[in-house]
Length: 219
Image 1 (spheres, rainbow, N blue to C red):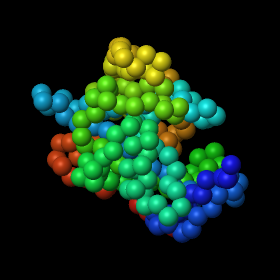
Image 2 (cartoon, rainbow, N blue to C red):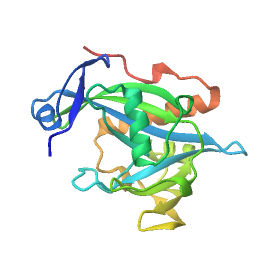
Image 3 (cartoon, one colour):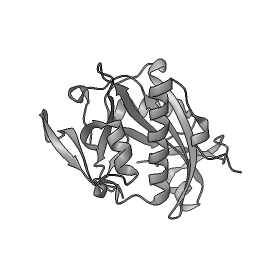
Image 4 (cartoon, rainbow, N blue to C red):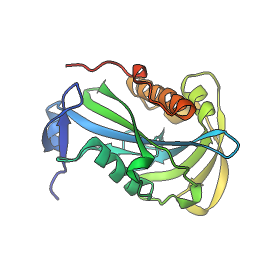
C-alpha cells in the first residue's frame, strides 16, 4: 500500500511542499496537523465540549482524550479542508463552512517530531447519539467546557462527563475524567490544549477570536 502523501509547512503556517509521511518524519520535516474541537452553549447558557478517546492501533497516545477530530493535512489540501474531512471521518458529521471557525495555529517541536498545528472549532451542538464510530475513536465524551479547562490547567483533580462507547453505542454512561487521561502528552501538546480551551471560551463569550492567545509565528 503506498505511503500517504502529506503537506509540509514553514513556521508561518504556509505550505511549502509535500512528502510521503514516513519520509517526512524520518527527515524531520515540519508536517501539518489539524485538530477540530467542538463546543457550544446549551439553551440554559452552559458551555459544553466534546472529546474523543484515541483508539487507532499503533497510536502512541492510545487511550488518551483529545479533540473530537484531528490528523495530518494531505498534499494539496488546505488546513480548513483537512479539518472538514477529519471531522466527517472521525465524528461522522459533515460541517458547513459556517460551522467551522479557525482558532489559531502553533508550531510543535516534540520528541523529535516537528509540526505546524492548526486548530478549529465546530460551533454547532453535537449530540452524543449522532456521533459515528470508526477504528480511531473508542468513545465520545461530553463535559462542561469550564470543567475541562480547569482539569487541563491543573485546578481540579477530576471532572464528570457523559460518555458513549464504541462497544456499546446504544447507551450513554457517566464517566469520571482525571489528569491520567492526558498523562501521555508532552508539555508542548498540553500547552496547545490549554490555549485551545482559552480561545474557545473567549469565542463563546464574545463571538471573536483572541489571536493574542497563540504564540507569534516563527521562521
